[in-house]
Image (cartoon, rainbow, N blue to C red; front, side, top):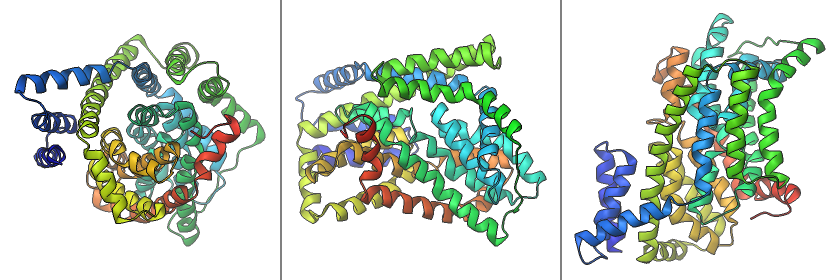
Length: 435
């Protein structure tokens, strides 16, 4: 357990000093390698080799392509059309402008693959309308925060691609299809709370009704953006292309959509999107490389096996351990973004879950759901600051109405945890397999 203790102590110490997570993992892993290699040179060589070999993966090619597609979507044209569609879908519900932010986040987040981009686009568009209509802005900002990660569960999802890689090859197509119901449950949990407080009088109870002609025009304008999801998932489910090839299709389709159909993508914004995608890819790939090296170290030294035996020795009841996993992930997820969270905790918890007979697909949805809640949770939730800024409220005002929304999302999480069919039924129906 020496390597595990060194890794844990160094990682925690560096994290407390504000060192980026990827460097915390990389430095901790390198120092832990000194316990199993004869010289410093050999530790450096092994570390470099493991990082290089871990990035030699066809599956990983999907990540920069999806990041590029998401970056091109953030030019405004797609977000505005999806928000208009959300108005048609839920404009009749009480507290309609707050409800619209939830549906718009789910739609745009699923297409862009970014909770931060979703919170920024939806919040910047709806906040002026909500303020003008007399809405409670802290509640609206809280709804934007709570709903922004929904799209990370609804495919195409970069988080699920990362999980597929780190879990040893869990099929991406199965993970994608498995994410639909949990992602929708996450959104519904926020919408139920908003409907309740609207009926209670905390939000305006007015509704917006659209004529059939207006609804058709809005749907027709949003259809090209929605078609991206249909093309990607239809192609994957139909066996036309893999998830990696689907990412290439998504990037090409988004370019055509933004440049020639919506005409919101200029050559200047395209260049900026490509630069942003390159920077984002570099960050993710460094994280993947050092995390895969850490996973190899823990596996080769037997640390994961010893840790698994210790946890199973505490209890062999899968429901007890799943509850423990949820509590730990909810707490630790408040300090980590979703990608480092997946890369750190999957190699530790997945072998234990599989020993208990839990499907790796089901566990992938559980851990992703947990970390989705975590990235919107104080103190370091990235979407918190974006939503507060665009809504022009301070964090203290936003946090109080956010807590009951988190409570409802955690209820949805426990439903997904203890009812595996919520994750596995749809893959079994559409793909004939559950992973």
